[in-house]
Image (tube, rainbow, N blue to C red):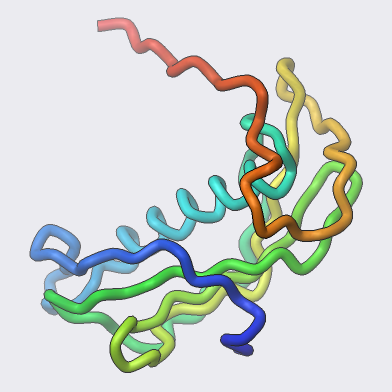
Length: 144
């Protein structure tokens, strides 16, 4: 994957609670972090706080991370559809720059307040936070 075209912003420290039975980073934790980071990226690129993950292509675990490793997650928008955004992702070791995980395509869809796809109106990547949504989504309240 071309590191020059990916923006690495979020960093994580691999802690004991992030490990699997083999003592390496649990893939489920890593995927949760990537989905959260990709969701935030999609919100900022499409200017809408209502986005959903539609599709993830093959997830390639290239290498593992150990307790104490510092990792960074990188994303890059690769295609803007009418209501969607496609991006690619990479996670790498901050110190060695060795790739840990790659995902060629993650697709998000912009939704209206009723949960239907809605055009976002963008065709190019923003590198600023000028597409912050002007609304927020109230948290879902669960019955006790």
